[in-house]
Picture (tube, rainbow over the protein chains, first blue to last red):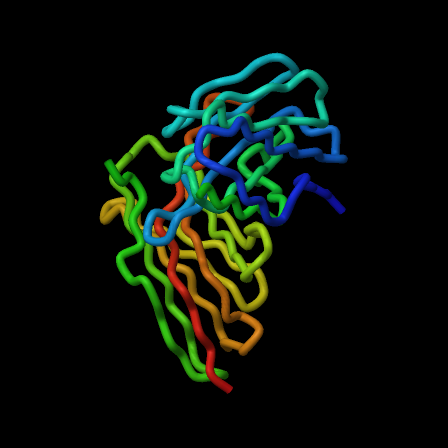
Length: 114
Length: 114
């Protein structure tokens, strides 16, 4: 079974803090993704990575950065947290094979910025 | 620009009846369409997919129909069970790369009453 784990289930941070969200997958997947989920908006892609040290902007990258130093680990960084970044953050991974479209998700991190 | 839309925020169905969840899209370049299911406090899980060259795909109680001329797809669950109660996300993806960016709809909350 594919396992995608995220470092925290719940996180409370103050405005202006630097926040790190960590994601680890154990299936040797090439592709990793960060989404945020907000009510009425579905899942929106923040950043993704198709290889170590490679990253691409998603649909809403502003205020975020990412790091992928190892194949199994993909980190999302909020440089200076703001209240509008309060959300559910979901990490996903996928292989680059024939079922590249099937993404496996972690349980999510509910981040509250006060 | 919402390229994938689920216009029904919620659906309520009696156990044993059919559940029909709908999804519309605007981008004719999408190559695959997927449905994901999400329980509270868990990440989304892949349910079923369909290629743009097909009009139907079946997997047990779940069938996805694709109408390309109408840019519409639907997920049928027959018979519905209380355990199917979850949020269902429609998603679409373009081929041509090995990583594939999913574009999600807003989600539909399905409640199946015993």
